[in-house]
Length: 123
Image (cartoon, rainbow, N blue to C red; front, side, top):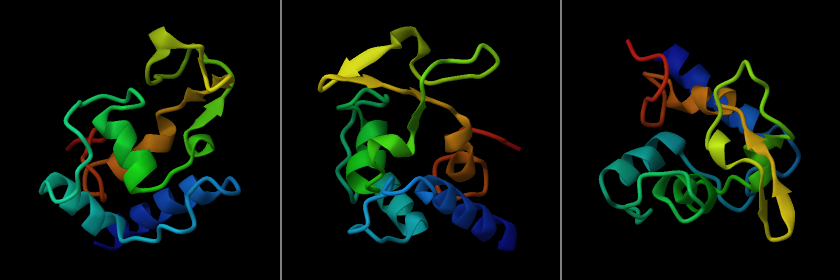
């Protein structure tokens, strides 16, 4: 339990480390928010993808309040990393180049035993 709490706090801190990456007006309990999403109590859409209008993007941007720079930080895709939507990179959104997302930013919350649905480090 202590390890899970530590990992959740670490993930939240990592997301917040860049100035202004998490909306300051949306303080929340991430575990309870994740449970509410899974229970269907929060409308986050039905398209299971990371497209801008997709469920996963809506959860992170609209529900949790992570700003673009909280995830989109890399100017290019290093060959040694796994990335989200690599085939679609680079993109331009509202006149700005969309930066790459490194999966390392996802692992904190999305590892087994942490607050969000587990996609990584499954036991």
